Image 1 (cartoon, rainbow, N blue to C red):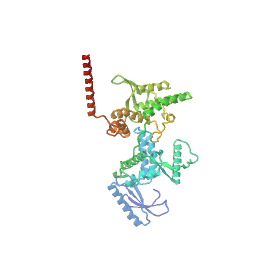
Image 2: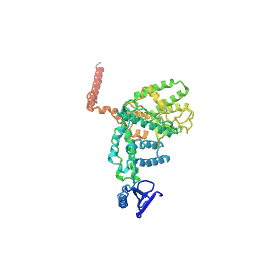
Image 3: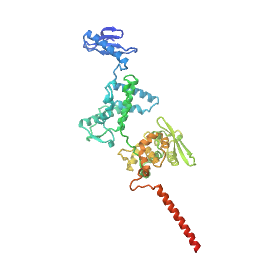
Image 4: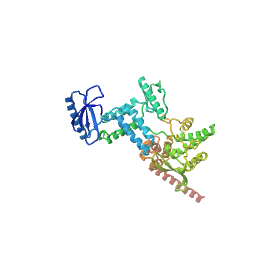
Length: 475
């Protein structure tokens, strides 16, 4: 190192020196880390050589103490550790272990909310207080998208901060797309001084990333194992908003008129495919990603044990696959799509564009248009409905018909616990007769009363028969 001057070795692996590239005359020490090919340099903050020697030995002793008690030797800001963790997740995505979209979501959280919260904080200084204080900080310093979480008033300064963050986000998006931003993007603060609260599900997801980065720091020996944070705050779970049976029937009726109103051949094609895709989704419970991946080779006609015709689908998600069964009508909906598809070989996707290319969005704008026309865009919680709601509709209608939870979980490729957690309200409605037993105006017939009534009826029938027989004899 050319800038090192007045170098003096105090003992093997411990050197003090001054720097020739700075104006001050402070001493520094450089220490070799035992059993590692690494060095640590520390400013001794003194110009006195005797004081410098004493402080250098203190620093050396501190290093050995840290190593003995498994305390990190080097400081690591959360921001740097987060970037290291992100690199490992990007490598996993390249190997196909996780989806390609996962690292993008992780990056947005690490470089966004978490960076503002603890980005410059050394990871070994992150304790229970910082971990537990994140939900409250996030609610105060963030704005959600949906008003179902409630709203809060914000100051002019906070509104401007939100506008600046939105401008920064738009700039990053354009840069990631290779679009050169010639002028700084400006976003005017909203005149509305109320913003939705952050949803609990968003906070929970961000804390899962927070905990994952801390666990990564433990593996890298940046922090001790005591700084593992696996527990999540108990936050509310929003009920999944499905279509009721009446709404589903209305969607059915409006959908047919919607197709007839199309003014161009391409519009007719897209509306027909969208309409049939909705019917397929509501009668199979497929996830959107499974519908995107569905190919014509994955559809097979079959018969159940009683000889009735059914349709079997082999569906594939991100990393799992399964077979599900559907009524014969689903096969009919699929045949409608096949009849107008430009490409319908076994290897082709079922849901495509009008030109035969795989559909990337599954006709999101068309679904929104149909829901608007049917006045079904928003659910009971005021949340705009998406394609995933058709899966929830399937689950709800099946449970209402009395399908066993275990068989439904197998069919939908999920767990019994997940079904019970999100669709427990269905069982309450289905078993209303049992729930309301004993309440005024809702009395179940008692078994003893039924027996008495049956005996009385049988006795009356016997009496009538005997009287008719007696009447015939006397006549």
